[in-house]
Structure formats: C-alpha cells, structure tokens
Image 1: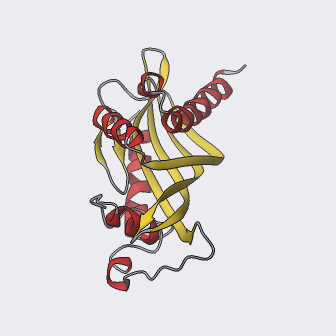
Image 2: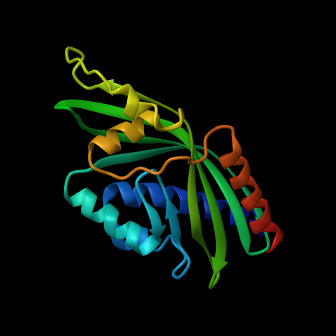
Length: 198
C-alpha cells in the first residue's frame, strides 16, 4: 500500500479504536491511541490531559455513566509526521433528568490533531465540533419540562447534552465549536497552523 494510503488507513483505525475501546471500557488499549506525553482531550464535561481523561472516563464507566459514540465519514489531511482528521460522529448519553430517564444524541465531528510518534500515529489533541443535538424521553408516556434558563445558557449545537450533563452534576464548558461561528473558525485556523509547522 502506498505510504499516504497506509497513513490514512492507520489514522482511521486509530479513530475507530478510540471509540470502540473507550465505550467498551478497555482502558489499557484506550491509552495506546494517545500521544504518551502530549495527549489532550477537550469535551463538554472535561478539558485536560489524556491520562486524566482516561481516569475520569473509567470512574464514570464504573459508576454507571452511559456515554457512547458512533462514527461516520472520515477524512485526514497529512503533512509529514502530522495530520488533522475529521470524523462524523454522534455522542449518545442516557441519564435521568428530574427523575425522568432520557436519551440525548449530539451530532458533530471529532476534529483531531495527530502526530507520528516512534513510527506510529498518535492522538495529540481531540476537539469535538458540536453541530446539533436532541433530547428524547425513553418512556413515551413520560413527560418532562426543561428549565429554559439552563437550556439557553449553552450553544444550540450541544444545549440538550449540556443540560443533561449539568443536571447530572458535571461542569459543562460554554463556547465550544459548533457548525459555524468564531470558535470553529479558530479551530480550523489552529489545524492549519498544526500542519504548517510539520
């Protein structure tokens, strides 16, 4: 396989392994997708090192937090030993709000900064882009009224996910990248800079 095709295959496999191993709670293998020193994860509920993210994810998993991922289309721009990958995804979280069990589905993209470390591709930074979301009650007979003040605190791309996570006790970051706007344009600029410095 030509090297560019091989790189794209390896990066796609890394992205898929991230989702599969994290959602399955396979923490030892999940740790291998990250750059060993520089891995960094940004999400609605967490911003920090890959090591701390693995620890927090494991604790949540063991305490019944249900956050699952599903992947779609994928592309990667590769320059030397650096790459920026984008992968369509959904984040699915189930929890209770005011005693009512709900599902939130957030659709967006994983925007990943990658580097080749000791001959293999590793994830240096992951920043999800939150495009749109929705909330559904699990029991169709149940009813739920959301607090509009809490809901309106967050961008439209992840407002329901943020609502659920806030109600569950998470501190949710505001101003994360959406489909359009300043935050996502800044992220695209950082991606171009990452490749330019390769």
